[in-house]
Length: 93
Image (cartoon, rainbow, N blue to C red; front, side):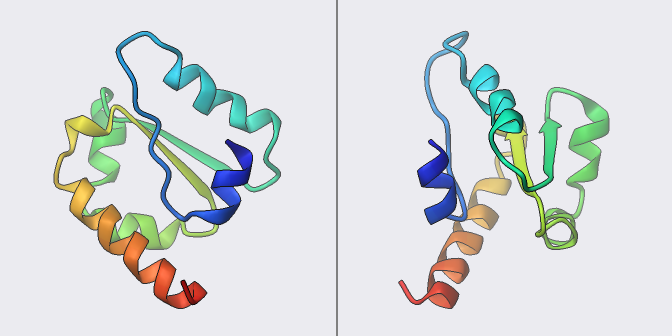
């Protein structure tokens, strides 16, 4: 998983409920030196932080942003797709 994070600007962990996705994301803290910002969108306080998602992501672009329960903010998927495309162009992919 760490190799994928170094290569791609957006990574999704998908799987059925209770299979360990959140646990795997939390374990990143043990292996990454970059600051990690963890959002759990089941929590209204974290969901509110993404009221202006583009600005929030830009302000925290120096961090690894982990967004748990992203399905609670479905409009975020298109923004992440645009972010992915822009990052690939900048990197020359």
